[in-house]
Amino acid sequence: MTMPDGYYDAELVPIGDIRPPDKIKYWAGAYAKRNAIRATGLLMPITVDADNKILDGEYNFFACEMLGFSHVPVRRVAGS
Image (tube, rainbow, N blue to C red; front, side, top):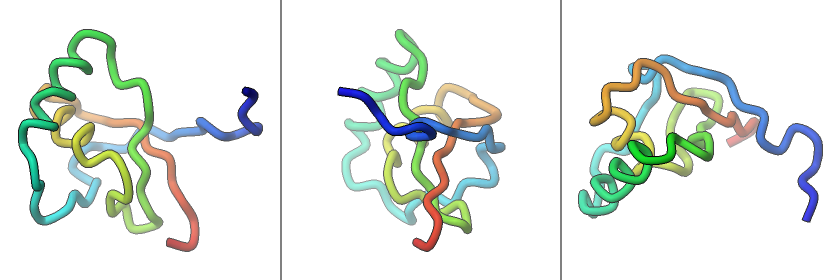
């Protein structure tokens, strides 16, 4: 399967500029992601809206935060 041009275009954003959800429902998911990211790196960017609010990838965000990342790759979705 081929992806359209720009499908994985991402920009690096300081982790402090990202607006995570107020609560995370299952911390176990974030801890599991932390272990995976530690082993392989972050493979998919976090999806955010124009205001840097997380739309998808909150477990990845919290895992990167736990690992001390200063910047994370984000894919910005316009019009959200």
